[in-house]
Structure formats: C-alpha cells, structure tokens
Length: 209
Image 1: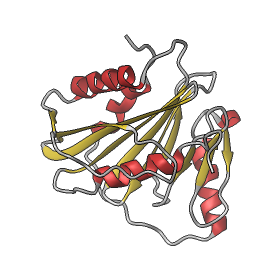
Image 2: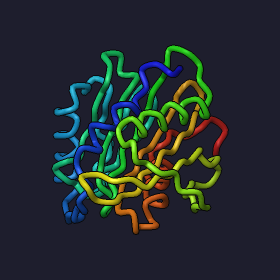
Image 3: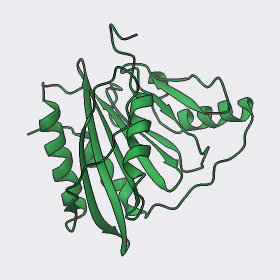
Image 4: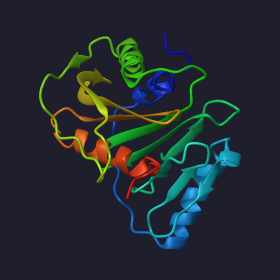
C-alpha cells in the first residue's frame, strides 16, 4: 500500500463546493506580491521560489522542479508543504470554475503510477462514497514531448450538488506528480483545464527539446 500519499489530503479541498473565481487584471509587481504571500503562508518557504516574471503568479518547488501557477490571483490560492523535508507538497488554484490541486511527492519506496493512481482513487472514494466512474474518452492536454498521464474521472456530489472530479498521475524520475481537478458536472472542460495545469507545472525532462 502506498504510504504518505498526498492524494489523501485532497479531502480537505473537497469540503467546499467549487465556486468560479474571476480572473483579476494585475501588474507584474502585484503578481509577484501574490506569489510571495502564498509562499509566506505555506510554512515551506525554504523549498519555494517566486519565479513570477509576468502578470501570472508562479512559484517553483525546488526539490521537484514543479512550478505552480495561480492564474486567478485568488485569495484562496495556496501551497501546502506536508512534511518537513519538503518532499511532499500540494498547490491549489482556481481555473475558471475548476479548482485544481497539483501534488509533487518523492516517496520513501518505489511505486508505479498505477499503484499511486489506485491509492488516490481509494482516497477519493473514502471522501466521496457516491463517486461514480465516468467511462468515456476524454481529451488530455499535454505539451510537446510529454507522455500522457494516467486519468480517472468521477461524478459525485459535494455539498448536495453534482460535480465532476478527476485524478491525473505522471511519474518523472523519482518524483510522482498528481493533479486533482473538481468542477461542475456539466463542464466538459474540467479534464482539459486540469491536464493543462499539470502539463505546465511539470519540470523539464532530461533530453527534451
């Protein structure tokens, strides 16, 4: 069984039904200030670097190379460092009406992407017993040269309202990267938005162009 799984912490984010965030028009300075504020509240500043160079707030996790983006510059944007070593983090942000949480974890043991996905699905079902798998083809967004991640999609209820929630898993070297996206059940862009967030966050792989 996968131990110390970041996906288990997802339940904390599912306590609130997603509410669309309105993109804010900000300056580069304001974007950097927003990223600084997220880092300051993360309790893991030693592992995080503000790499904002435009109006899009961006924070890099040094150990994994994952870059968290916060396009809405929303007050609910966050980064959580789950252990003192900095080897297990999550960052959450709004992408329109979809809330996306990205995870980077370096486990003590070696697990396959399939094992991590199975554990993440168990965590989702524990938090949402009514979750129903959606058996259909979805378009997964990747950047050039990136393999497709594993994907699992579910329909379920949060706060009495129907939502669509998904899990994406990619492994690069010793790191496991996951994404969890949750949005309206009628919104077919939840997979596209969440997979693009993961694709942009992943570190550059050795040998890639």
